[in-house]
Amino acid sequence: MSRLLFIFMVFGLLLLPFTTLAQQSRDFSPYKMGSQELTLSGSGVSDNEFDKTNLSLDIGYGYFFNQNWQGFIRQSLNIVDQPGDNAYNAATRTGVDYNFNMGNLRPFLGATIGYIYGDGVKDSFIAGPEGGLKAFLSESTFLIVAVGYDFIFEDADEANDTFDEGVFNYRLGLGYRF
Image (cartoon, rainbow, N blue to C red; front, side, top):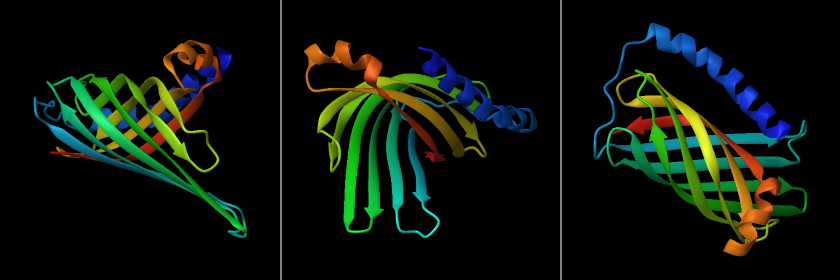
């Protein structure tokens, strides 16, 4: 459990710069029923000679049932390029988030469920909590920082047993509300 506390503390420190943004910006209107958003996040890692590269892309679509509750679907794709071996894995998730209206800062908490598949992973179900922050730069554009905890299971009987063996996932990206 101390590892989980450490992750949330690091996540909290990452959010500190957004508090300055909140104090300098004006308040943007809250979400309304029927509001939608698209998010795009990505990351990459390469060794110093670019022989080994890991790229990750995450795209999401969200729909608001009212000004706070959002349903979403997200698709993640990870590509690993190594000499003589290329692999990919992907995850498809759906879930709900509760968005707190705090002006142009919108913290959220929620839960996801989905499926992970591809090379180098055992095709399995995933589920878990997530939380994050949307920091609006304009009426429709925002930065998103999020962390989730996925536990992996093959059937419902196994879900309780595997919660402690989960993995953290992180996202940093841009979003567009329409």
